[in-house]
Length: 317
Image (cartoon, rainbow, N blue to C red; front, side, top):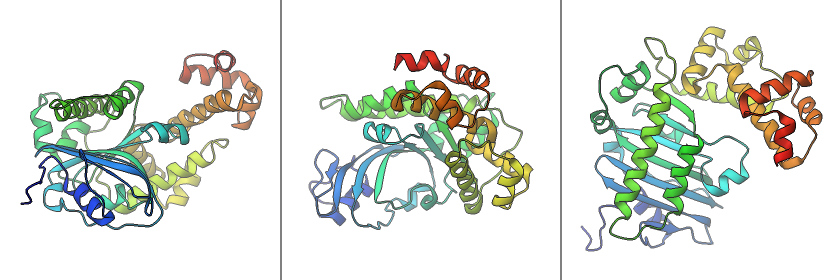
């Protein structure tokens, strides 16, 4: 083992640094100009939990072998998206986190991209289960912690969790407390996320997901978000997905925790709020732009989601 080997530096970060030909300093590498821009930092807190923060843009594709293949089978992955400061400003999507069990193929959730802005936290399933009381767990929580079938969930990241992310990224913590602080914050994020998952309604059994199911469900999601002015039609979506309506509804709700229409409406109103705040459009312009033919109905739906009428919202921005 090299003399300067640091057990708290993830192997994935070492391999990335070696490929780019750059040094690791304080568990961080900066992307050299000839490859792009940004950084990657990571921490192996112990055998049970590790974290990678990736915020970079590459001008060429880099393929890395997964150095943690042997231990990945024990871990549950939590991939936080659209939560870093720059990505929040540049992306209209809501901050979210994808949760995957060991049997979901990693390349579905962590593809090689030239642009990445995520926080990946991996936690040993048995360790996580040991922290929780086993009685009265929901089906979602118990089957997630069993970690023996391919399951994938996506959950919206709420402001209380975004505050923790900001503390992880920005809080200046001196040695020897840095690793302790970051591990506690990572575990706090996971705890708050599990609380949200626990509150989801679910049946007695979850449906295992294969690669095709995952790709289809996310294609449907992208189709919905690309046409926010047009309410989704289940028959049309099911036909494009080559699925029965029943299967599509079941898998979509299992992954995203909402029905297709509720999910659509959430992002529709999110886009309305963005247009009112950033474009300074009138309430009627925004309502009609997003397919509301009745402005009173638009105002009621907006109030249900945002907590105030669109006119009042626009006046505060």
